[in-house]
Length: 224
Image (cartoon, rainbow, N blue to C red; front, side, top):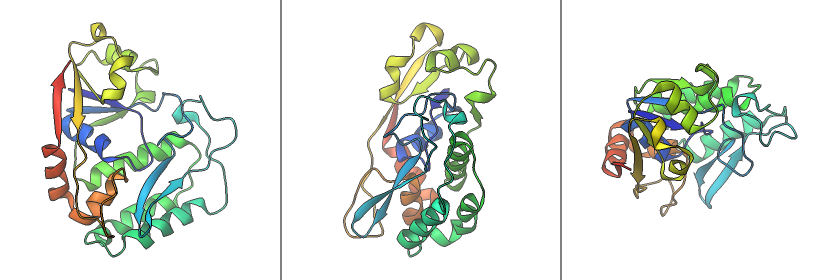
């Protein structure tokens, strides 16, 4: 079963659950970048509740394919993001195990949003110990730019998140499935629970085994 999803900057839990349930995953980096999306930003848990960290882009990138959207060279943005991770998560039970691999992301110079978001998505899956094979849509024949086009190129049963089902014609795929995901309440590093954080929030607090167990228990694959 093939899952298709645009890459996110340190993706949310439902994206990780999608990869966990799939046999293959396509990161749709040929889709258009959209402002006010999670393509170039994510949320971290902090003592006040939560905070955004956003990757700066050059002007006029809205509508540009994600893999070609140019990152702006605003000084020290990656250092600020790394400091935010350290400040909010260094005291969690599992952060130190992943710290060197996570820090390596922020030591690199990134020119395009697609390269960065695919790297953070892949790293997240690796840290969750999810080994689902991943390919970027930009690597497929013809650079397909829609859900239907990807399904047509790969001719496979397709697994989607609910918001994406309207964008695919079931005639182009043998079978279309939808992932129903209900975000679980889990212990976080600060008082209370705030949903919608990067998936790494769960990982740093629970570790990969408990995190994967929760994702499986709170997700269901349904044919449509």
